[in-house]
Amino acid sequence: VALQKLPVVICLDRAGLVGEDGATHHGTFDLAAFRSIPDCTIASPRNEIELKDLMYTASLAETGPIIIRYPRGWAEGVDWREHEMAALNIGEGEKLAEGSGVALVALGPCVNSALAAADEFARTRDGKGPAVWNARYLKPFDHRIIEDITSGKYHTVITVEDGTVKGGLYSEIAEIIASAEVRPAIVPLGIPDEFIHQGTQAQQRSECGIDKDKIFQKVLKYWK
Image 1: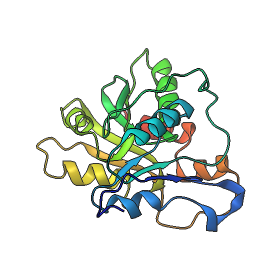
Image 2: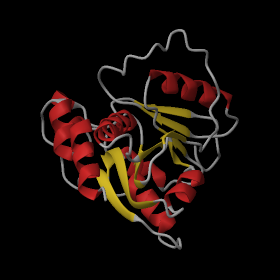
Image 3: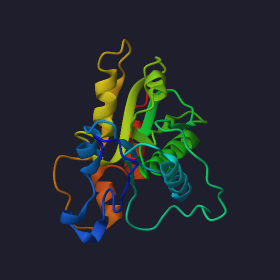
């Protein structure tokens, strides 16, 4: 499909940690597996509205493949039914919060946890907190994010993803900025190089450090 650039949309259900379904059912390896394939577009929406827009965007594409991944379980609760579909630019993320010192770059549902952690952190620091980027696309990756995090405004970048750290968002950013003149420290939060055993999704996300509280603690650790 990729070799022929066929206009195929591949929807990956149960992306990320699946909770009680157990270690055999996690969708944590797809980002690393597909990122190396040429001409793939890989998208991960942060909520129902973004999923709706990405599905619409994919339906308009003349080439592919376009991979859209989304998690198991309850959605974020936003009103997607009344949302009028809009096409999203391929390879374009969204900056959700300005900040300095520390930047959070997150993908998929982890964006919501990162934004909640940043909001809580800012409330405890008189409005000062980390910047937050919704990467939205792992591939092609938004180079505006790279330009921002290598601008000198941040000493630390924390990546947050519900896939394996090896080969995913962290790897993408680390590879790109390896030759940049300004190279902030990059701290990964995601699925470690091991199998995650059975538990609730909340327990598993906490264990892997990608829930709001663990992201908050990581920002606190690196805040200067």
